[in-house]
Length: 316
Image (cartoon, rainbow, N blue to C red):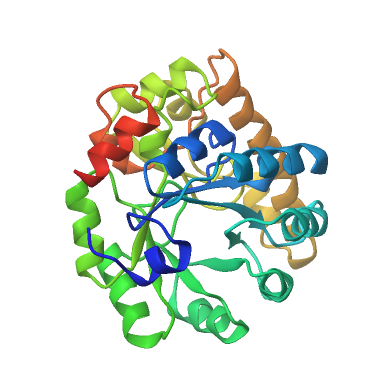
């Protein structure tokens, strides 16, 4: 694969970021990613305390090798009460990049740039891309309609080409990548790198249940559905019998309350809290309440493999 603006920014061999996945991503996965010449990223929310986050950063810094890099994902809106503390720890300890989601990245960009950390911002349309570009973002992550978890509405081709034509900073594509052919396609649209998540759920390093990993092997692209029952925002999950049983639409009570401007924020916060607990239980413990987040790129997942072998499949 050719060198791109992102491989140069992060000093990595291949234009691939191992996407941050709630509950799934961990230091073992990222260390293997760095060894293979790509970047790895972990949600800061995967650590319950700031001390745990600090320990993880130190472990990654000690394991970092030439040709690999690591970063963390920050939820930058008010729902993340740990945001300011997490940002402070990242800036104190240091990392190569931060990915921001679900809010304004202004403060993150300001603080991170003071200590030489790159900031990449999740966007789903041109309007927000131009906004974060104006704030000084180093790149935008174009979250398309094939992404796992919270996704956008535009196809990869439409979103990438729109952002490339109208923005002066690099575009990283997120969604719809499960093999090298997919990477080549995204790069041909003008992306400088890709963010890949779902294929790594079925890695031996991921500390989720074997049942969750095996589901990514057994199910495919046609088994991915969009649900409003996790965070109140459309999110992709595997269409297990349990998901079919509870349905994918918000309840009639939530629907009514979400139309009330004063109550809407609180309803979403309650739904987010309930949904995240259910998702965590399904990912970490044996349960019939199988709400497993994944994207359609699990179509290419045929075995549970070490992270190293998954990366080899993506680049060769």
